[in-house]
Length: 166
Image (cartoon, rainbow, N blue to C red):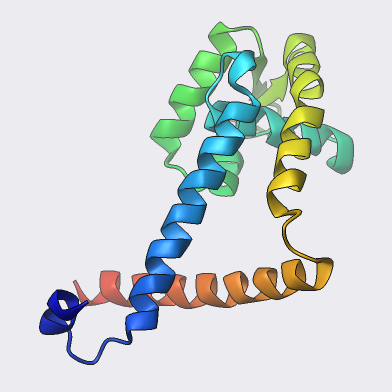
């Protein structure tokens, strides 16, 4: 800790411990969710694309999203999303169609194989997520959720400030 305080004398040691612990938990959760769909032969980000499309069908009544919508929901670049979509299309899990309202754009939807794959792994994936958070009571989960939202909002603002000052 002394080395860190040599670089930033005012830092609260708790801040460093929180950052380390949050990183450790985040990496562990990431690894567990990857394992929950290993058998599917997809990366978790690819599976997430399928889940976004699945939920768009189930909840939104429309089964198509454009790549920009999906990349925004996942927080990845459009180029990365294009690569995911291309791979999922090659696997026969999604298909693309020209947008009838704007012929310059296209929309992505699940194929029957994609829908089946999501359904097949959804239960196991959700069971893994549920098991990870079962160490916390419902009230603790609510508190953690609010704190993470607060931290996320602040980190986003700090990031925007640093980009603006560069």
